Length: 248
Image 1 (cartoon, helix red, strand yellow):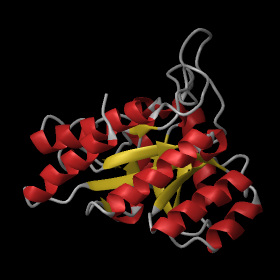
Image 2: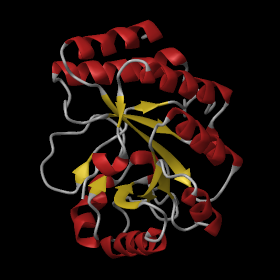
Image 3: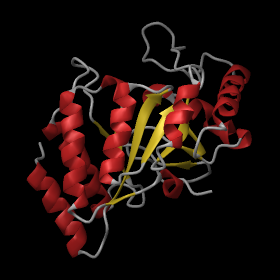
Image 4: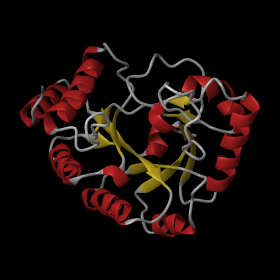
């Protein structure tokens, strides 16, 4: 398992080879103004870290647009439609599952896109709930108007649009209590993906993605973000804006 020293060492290797380590930050499940979301946006503003909020369209409230008006470092993406589970009993949760008809999924995604278009700094990038089902809907997302997609894990080689840029470091342990995954496991994922990019055993052009869920954070998650942003700001890391990650 990796430590903060391992992260510092890996970033040092990037610098010594004349390369800049690139990261980006996606946070899921936004729909309204909450104390947790305000705290998340405040951390990003204080550390000058751009953030991409994956917004669930169906429960969207007017308070979110007002909050984002005052957060120029935040952009919004589309997070499914209602975040409802449509997978058959006994299978892993998925809003977009093969058992649904393509017309029903198209309708949901299109309806969601229309609800989000007027959010401040909205990008037509699709993020499937639970990071599942992208293969079920990807073929028609470009037709609807999406220019990007994002899930979890190292992406395969880029082929056809829309552009896919995933996240790789999840700070929450969903299987064991839904609390902070722990420094060593989070850093292991971060250092591991950076190393794989450097050695080209993963796509070197895919920025390493941090994944958070503000509504589920415990104090361990918040503390980790504070330290991560502070340490990377001193190490020459470039945190990319989603508008650069998913160019028009």
